[in-house]
Length: 379
Image (cartoon, rainbow, N blue to C red; front, side, top):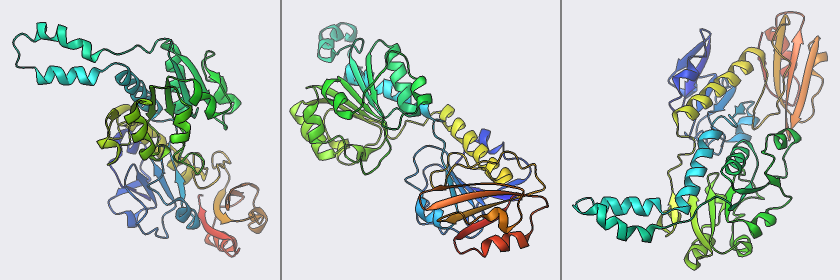
């Protein structure tokens, strides 16, 4: 029986997929597998029985990836499962920044007791006049699952769309609307766009990439949308740009104490994936990843180990190995019939099929290798 702990509420449509061989437990310390959304794993003890953590979402800042890898714990995420929810919030933010809907809504609330509000509003509404997005130019920085959806939706709305992504694959490029123009650099986006939407992971290269130097290249009155990570934008530089009017509006789904106190910021409390559909999709995807890992040993969408698959576990036996450094030929050590092995940075993962049901002796032979972090019997 595989014990599964949920560190956050996980949509039942996902946990219902676990089946009879899995048991939900309350305590993380009792689990073989953990499912998590936003709860922090950084301060939790990674006990010996733990083999996997699945994040029902894309970001994994709440999980100690290196610590997990060093303990032979595979960490999964669910890229793309919440992409439509985030895309719709980006479009909403863009429209809110273009039309002063929030100001108009507040005016109605403030004047709700005015018996002549239907007449008063005709005089008041001019202060809330905005612009249209049709024909405006938007730049998408990062054309992953979310960025591509945003790009295609903006193209469908009649916008001029450009995007950039140094890691864009041919398959991903093929998913873009033919009207989306892919450029080589962020600078090309900074210099020409009315709207800029960032959809990149937080890396050394992207931390505070929207700063005073970047904004100096931008058009006056640009709107910047950040539904990815707050640290992609330098708060101090954004404050100055908003005060000067260089940036007309800053739309973010990651408010902090600084941005929450700035004028001309439209902030939402991390609502990107907060839809019933996104939560269901993330839960289903996370559980399917865990089941394939537990039942077949396959890894898909890991963020600290390589993606490795040997298909369904149809051989008589199967074992998996998390290791550090080079793969020392586990297949020969246990007389395997088939095997696959790959590395991701310092860490590697192997799947070995056997002509017999795997035994504790097979695991002992593998664990005798110096670089093995964790070995597991799948079958």
